[in-house]
Length: 125
Length: 366
Image (cartoon, rainbow over all chains, first blue to last red; front, side, top):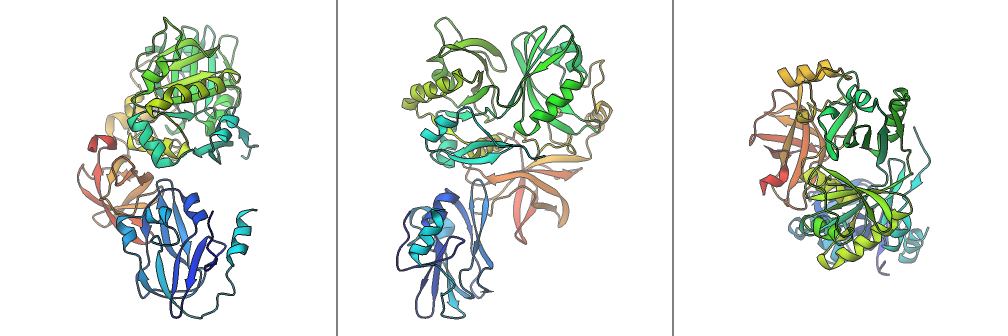
């Protein structure tokens, strides 16, 4: 399973790319494999404010609906509209075109999140 | 009631095939092999092979066995001829469903019942209470192998391993034959809406048949399939799942399966009065089919359903249909139910999603 070095990770299998004023979020390669074929994605509306750990989106496969948690708190500024017509992007490109939403972080800190190697270690348990 | 988790007798085959295993009704079983969607489409277009060793195989024998079964089953086993099977129910006193099952008559004093894994022990206990020298029951969990071969290529695949001179059974019939050196019962039925077979055999022969079928079916596109596609295939065909669409509190008539409840016979069976009344006057609740537009949030078990803004019931099974490309669901609603084609709504995460009332055999919407 791939876990890019430049990202931060939540134990609940979301990744975050922190840039200056925005945090881009998606699900990890491990998560997409566990979810299997994604057929529907429920994304938050821009303007929605969330705390770290809140349920912010839902990803559905044929079998089940799975909650996605906000890895950092903040305000939703953008969602990936390509997912509504092609939710399979989450399976095919979980770290690129399969990104889910962008937040304006309430705080710049990602100290509560895992590094790539720390996250990869949680998968081995 | 928690029981130790049992391994399927085909577990080593599944491990070799890279299956993802989950606990289900006291068993560790494959939820998927290559992927739910791939397995689903393989079964619709070619063939799928499913491990159903968790399902209870119960042999019911003795000179008084038919009379005994007639007093506990909702469909009349006296209608069956040798080698014939039908769908039936073990109702409780309220007309609710202890289990739905397939009943085969192998001979005048020899019946074969296939029950759900989740109800196997309960059904055995119930049967044991009726046991006598004239009516004997056997078949404990884990004592046999079952597999389902389903799809348009099922018959041609199975024909390849049948002994020369043997013929495949007709629909809803069962034969006893030899496969891969062991005895097997082969019934022509299934849980996918496709032509297909259920094969029942011993622990030693089971893995051999499983591997051989995968081998001879490979060129035609046969895939091993897990519980995930088993569920999506059965729902597309409008077939109920006990514990969701049927339950101790949901009668077969309410589930739309009244055809398989035979009240035109002399012997009493549990719940008969209720079921007879529901068949005659209509049940208080009705199971309807729902379909969504493509791109809508999929309907799921437990979601409330609304008609004209008022709550009318809830979804008992629902998912995004791989064949149709939109959401499908069975919903149990109060009678009178909205008619075919009428608009309803279901609630997903606090939001109302529009849907239409459909036939329960969703594949017929193709």
